Image (cartoon, rainbow, N blue to C red; front, side):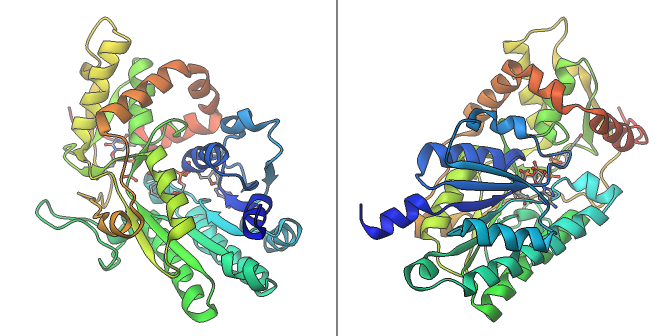
Length: 366
Ligand code: NAD
Ligand code: TYD
């Protein structure tokens, strides 16, 4: 083995938030495709579920660390002990509705946490030399929501679209992106930023539209559609996002941002109806599931449309989504049907409390 191949095979990457939805998919994907060890730092909030990575219990390349990204001392210790060759930063508070009810945790984790992680990475980077220093990367995983909202005829978000976040979640992610940008320009930290559209797939917490619809449909509960249901999102299968992140990590240009999207714009109501049709086929009930759809009061400040122009990552790094929405959504519905115990386990007391807070006060329109 050449010395650089040996370095890659032996130096771990540090992942934050690896027990969440995209993080867990990424960790599993990494273990399937890469040789390096991986250290996963996760605070195990309501959204973090170590069960997602139970398959790695005997995997010697995998290390789990239970801790918070706002803990600078822990971060310093982690970097000193593991000497990671890269950081892939997923850890965040990620749900818009929760950010409306309680923005504090979003500012704490998404802004302060990212700041502290950047500082620890910078200190670590300063201690590196030669090839090891040249190889170091800090990849920040972000969202298309930083760009705000689009009218139906507007062009999709590109990497040069001005930031215009509208929710506390989007504002906190936009802030973290700007910190990463500044750490690159001021301290020459070798950073990369990815801004991705809505993901769906296995292990997504049932507070987000697609898993919530599946879980509620199966439980015979109402399927809440905010406002008129004509808000558009650009859905990407999570495995495609993981592939894109690995591609940006290995070949992205330093200091650059890459937009990642599914080229797949759908109105929420269509998504909910498609899930109902899939369930009618795969788990037929007494009545069509679509009869459970209820239009409820809209989300305050609800962004009307998101769409990503992914030309840059396609042109520079040759990435394109491998999955279509019909195949990805079918696989997702099948996964939730086959993993009823997973849904039951994550629907803890805290989850039920959230459902009460978010939906009980909402007027049902139809
Ligand atoms: P998630 O809410 O499912 O998981 C977040 C994870 O971060 C959890 O495991 C949680 O325990 C951990 N975490 C939270 N606060 C922490 C802290 N202070 N210290 C350490 N760990 C902490 O989120 P997700 O949907 O997997 O999103 C992951 C990342 O991708 C986020 O940064 C999000 O902004 C971004 N993103 C998500 C989507 C999407 O559609 N879900 C789309 C684009 C970008
Ligand atoms: P969500 O999955 O929360 O992702 P985001 O807000 O980050 O786009 O919501 C996706 C879309 O679905 C969004 O337009 C809000 C809408 N939505 C509903 O109509 N009903 C619901 O119960 C939820 C959770 C979301």
